[in-house]
Image (cartoon, rainbow, N blue to C red):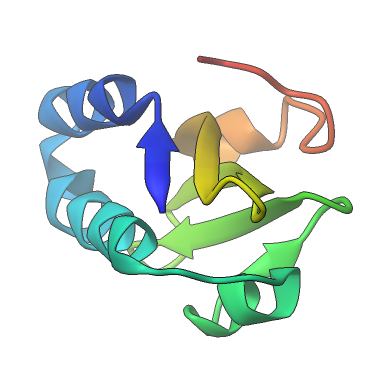
Length: 100
């Protein structure tokens, strides 16, 4: 799947070195996938949770970081909507946030 806002998410990882490996791995898995349903996208990570009809929240690094991604399966595109710490995540609406 093509990931929109990949550069912004990688930039976040470089400024948060503790999260870099976990985030990088998560982004790689998403980009190499060819999922066609939310169920498939959620099954890729045991900590994934659907937050709306087109968004999934992925917990990374033991839940310290959250990544929210929206999917367009027909076009095989994913949109990074949010990346941040658990505390930052608690301050946003996962269903509508558009950080990037």
